[in-house]
Image 1 (cartoon, rainbow, N blue to C red):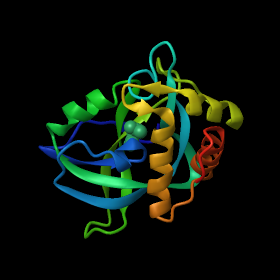
Image 2 (image 1 turned 90 degrees about the vertical axis):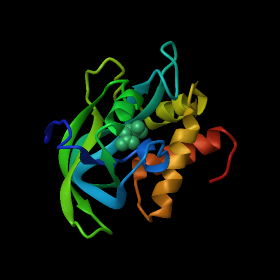
Image 3 (image 1 turned 180 degrees about the vertical axis):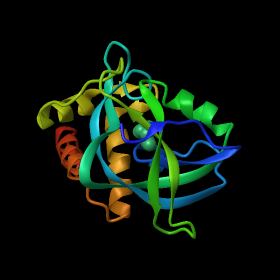
Length: 185
Ligand code: SIN
């Protein structure tokens, strides 16, 4: 891992969201910025027992993998320390906190460090890579307490399109899952 396992510094910290944290902000924020990190790519390789699937039938959600040369666009939120209790609970299914440098795209601070939640290979909910059609079928048919797995994917794809951000891993799955569910993009 490039960063180090992190706690927050002082009573507030930046958090970088690359998945559901981009579009589902169910916590108080002090500030926010469009942001990106270098050398990481999104992958639907993490199982979800608690949000988009169940322990018997886990869904597929995002983690980040090392990918030199890839830039991952997301959103940075400035939050107070207490918010990490909520985030740690929300991301408890295999994610750990790391600290990474991030580039701020529309903020007076141009670079800073942020906390990210990454699910690494070998965690108890890890699913790993699979053929794209298999991952699409899996996402199209999974559901958990937070709703259909497909909604997680489509909301993320929509959020990236709104930012003119191209992520072919996400967009290819988005197209295939919409086709499987008989929806148009
Ligand atoms: C994130 O959004 O930054 C973490 C992964 C997720 O909750 O989808």
